[in-house]
Length: 163
Image (cartoon, rainbow, N blue to C red; front, top):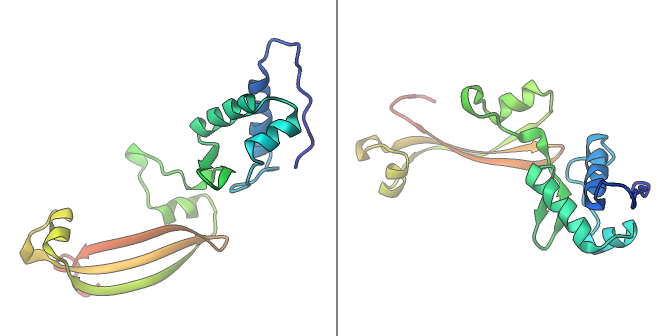
């Protein structure tokens, strides 16, 4: 673990805020990289010599900000912000986003074939039964050998014959 911080227990800044600022600094400095697992709240509280509630509040606020991710039964982790998708006018594919940020990735094609979709999928794809032939592509993207995206793509075959 990183060096234990010194907290000002007499000043006007609440301890939970000081812990929150300390954790944020660990993340932004790279001391705690993406996917880094934090100590359990009880252990972190003991290490920092504060109550569990104080640690919990700091972690909860950082999770709301998107810097931390809590997974029930697994723990609290530093979020992987590299995959934030821009919204609105700047919509791009994940691969375009990764390329623009200089993040190396690999793609593995798990399946590719021409298929006839059933009526349920025809409805979900907002098409008619006479246009139920699709090119199906199932891919998985990896960053640093970790799977990050599983995609199922359906392309109407009549629009892109020979795909």
